[in-house]
Length: 579
Ligand code: ADP
Ligand code: MG
Image (cartoon, rainbow, N blue to C red; front, side, top):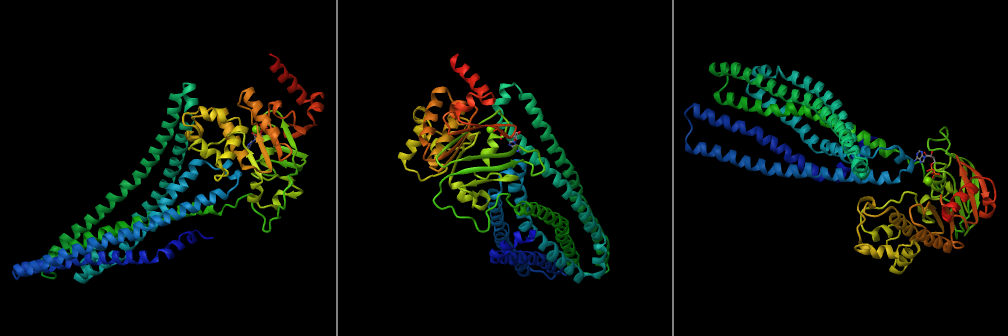
């Protein structure tokens, strides 16, 4: 795909509007160019003392009609060209957001949210400007410029050539300054991305900032980035404020030339007074096309660069892809096997986070995973819904390599509660129904009960309709965790993955959740990661993961009586209970 191909469909789909807009735009230009002709006639008649009330009225009415037509046509072209470009903007934005959703978890590990925001707002806006205003400026620069020069040539060739002497200077400086403006604009955009990101982050982390009395430091950090943004803008303004006065100066220089040489030619009667006045009007009309010429290169360059950046993202292929002919999953059993799995977040050459892991879980059985923080437990879990693919070895479901399945089909079989529960702003109900919005209220109640939420929700100010705030800030960690759990239980998938489901709840609540997990046993294949052994001790099989390797494997009784990590942690947690 070429970058151009991104916008051609827009020009095709809205061809009619754009054509109407262009015709009106050209009409405006032509009418504007006609006005000095009428003025010329009036002035000539006046100087020849041939004007009377009727002829003056005729000229005045002509100009008034033209003004009216110009007004109407301006309205139409603004709607048809500038308005229609908004459709392009919306199309591109939807396309970008749609595409981002297809990209894999790895992409979002690397991408900065601020950059993505800049693409979705700034870049797309630049493309809209190039496709809307750019078209207008291009038309005016060429049509209006050429026609104004044409009319001037018609009045007096030599005079026109004098007047045009500064014009190459205009074009050259527009070119050079345009290029510099573009470069500086890039830096402005980068600084803007940094600014959005830091403001977003500081707002999200406000509680921590307050708790540590770090407001001053946080403000200083934001102020620093904000200042950098101002500095970049000032550098941009440095060039733009050179550009416009320079353009004005050059046109005024031309005016001086017209006044002197044109005035002499009027005295010598080479041209009429009316021609002289009309010539000055054309010169004024010419100043905008000349500026537009400089401006349009800038606009189109910016739009082009933004289009390139957008295309680079749209060209990104998701790392996790559906195979061309996905294997079908007949009646799913739910046997999951890790078969010599090695994984690194940085690709096959990177530091391995999981090394040569082989574990198998029978359908309807439960696997417990324990291990110190950072040992790779969450990573192991994220391989099952194929958020990432192993670098070596394979993960299978009922004997089929996950990579042979359609990821969407696979994910329908999996209910996954990540370690960090994520809530969307909205109500508690919205968040629980996230995975299956159609669920009936019986099932919702059941999910609430299994996640030990019934009483908690009843105690909330508006029950299920309580708004949770951005990312659920209005709830406690344990509440968020249980909402995420209820969301997964509601999905009723044959495979359930729970990442540390009782890490943030008290012992009594934990007992309710553990009982719910145990009730699922037999019907579903469950993998529970937990640093609290009470969540895994009744599992059919427990593995200990240390530094990315499985170091122990067996039942609770076996591991508790061995000499490894599990037994050590078990003794410590027993001690905890005793005290
Ligand atoms: P656990 O769940 O056992 O605490 P994790 O699976 O979360 O451990 O992390 C294992 C290792 O992988 C850690 O060293 C962590 O820094 C690294 N890691 C986790 N997530 C990412 C990620 N998205 N990108 C890069 N490295 C990661
Ligand atoms: Mg973890």
